[in-house]
Image 1 (cartoon, rainbow, N blue to C red):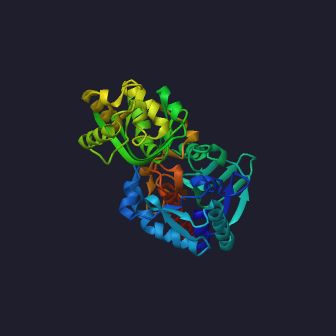
Image 2: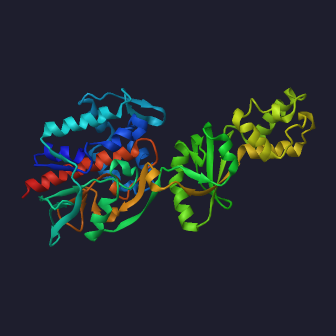
Image 3: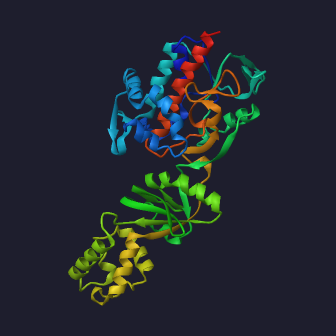
Length: 404
């Protein structure tokens, strides 16, 4: 929608072909229906939140920044607010308001919209775009074509990997696609006992043997299958890649008390136990842990639940402290890409001009959004990348059209 509207605003005659019966289905469900539009961080910080080819976005983000996006929406009646983690949302908390703003933009710029059109093939001749052919055989001629079909995530919104197939057929390299920002499946049975429990202000570390791969601080959630929530989703890209690389499970540890060192936590335990010296161990952890996690931690600590606090040995207390600083979990796999927020991998950015988003292989062919091998952590970064690359592609395609 951004690409089509910008191309039309720059003077091109634009036809937008949409597989679905309505526009913006993925925006409508993003941010749990609230739409985390972008992130208010500075450009450098935004780039560092793209483990997948962030440097490719320097040009597009300079051309159309997060501030430009906020102003673009404001002019179309969408006021925004900044929440935790610099995440930007509509004040209305209504993703459909964002979709409606774009639909209005398309109408105002004169974009012709055809919904329910499933494209089957891109048409080219001697390295130049001619148009596209739909599955019903109808041909739409065009001097320039912008592919912005998304990845493989949320297939119910129409993301079925069509763009990858078209690009491959034209000789483009498609980097192996895999889930990113995806929940993780763990092997421990006790996770089911705490499903639905949210942990805030914790630190999760990912390991390969004794080597720390990455860590994230913030909020996570236990599910019946394993783990999800913001910091798990952010870790998931690395974990998925490591699972594929090694073929073996990945170890995670949860630091339940990241504000305290091991020594400080031991002093805390000593104070807590001194205050509850006449209680049994099972009744001495209520100020230290969420209620639903207490029985799990007792089992994992191997300290008898009925044991009196004053009978707990120094070795048992220190072992408990280590467990609190490193609750272990084993990641077996992720949920499938259909359950992921974003698809990692995609059309190789080495074959795309970042100044125009045009293919280096086919003249008149442009790409924008998640179909590219560009992906970010959670926080509004992925949508910003889509809007910025769409802006650049639309403007560049219009300029190419006007140039003959």
